[in-house]
Length: 456
Image (cartoon, rainbow, N blue to C red; front, side):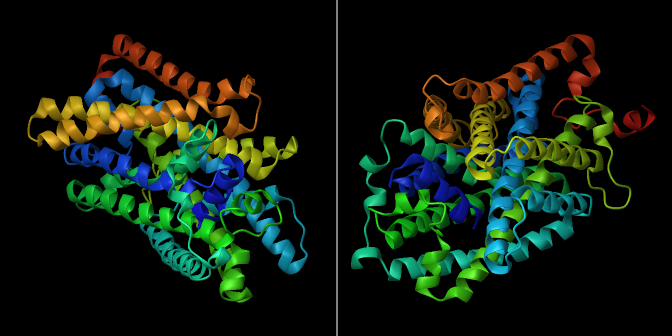
């Protein structure tokens, strides 16, 4: 629901093209190729910070530290940006139903408080909560798809959303792929929970394959249904209209207002679920870096009762408070600025991480020599090429995504943040190599031995 009512609607609005549905199967194929090498790595490397660990194993500790810094800025960005979407969606819905007109940031801070509490609880509670929300929203999305495709605008189902000429247009293609990458962000996080899974060598690969397949189909069909239901000639203008009511107006006409309201509530719970998921991911990356002493050791502390990464969780909450407060104080739009800008930062960062991880998979798996050529070389090699092309398109179309002039500083600043994080991490990793060889040797390996860590 976050992708359908948030990401896809924003993609139509910002890109101004109707070829959005075609981007999802293209990206799903690329991610499926990426998942082959990634899944193979999961059988050999178990770590709470997956990109960090995999790149460390394949390319060396310094590059692994660079990856951890990029991961932290990327996952923090998508998590914080979602507070803008949650605040705007919650505020609009409650105002329409009750007349209670609170600012978007008030609802954002309320969600932040609940996420902070749940982030400190045991992961199985979070997993059960997320599972319930996920089942409900998938049902709502399928209902939307059926209703839209059964009642197409103009009386006939259009396939114009899959016409390549409607996607590959100057400036717009990068916008669509940036939002699409942000939509898939999180599929790779199965590996972040490998240390908490009963059978990580099997579970991670299965979770990856299932996630890419299910979300790829749902995103493709749902974005196509959105274009079919509103019509190719009106889907963009309706998405750009703040009062367009997309997609809930279509659900109301296909079913009734009650169904539309339930779907709207599920949007809110969906965004909340995403907030909680990314909060947990950030906490585990901070934990992994702290445990291996890449970051201060305090980040490795966990709750004595729940074993959750308590310091990492609290740190993520503090960062969210700071950035949401800044955007609120400056009067920035919650979706056009906070959600869109931070989604773009996350998309660039995740693309860079997947690109580096694919190269690391090739190096590491070929050194081991116990995986097939397909898993060790061909699939990750094709993924590397495809991810590189997509990354080029996304970064060169930054102005269209951010709504700025061609030479705006923001066009360079946002991708520059990701590059800067990588460079700082690389320099810090090189420093550790020369100044603290035991710590450097532990990068990607879980850090020092348990007794050594406890004594320290």
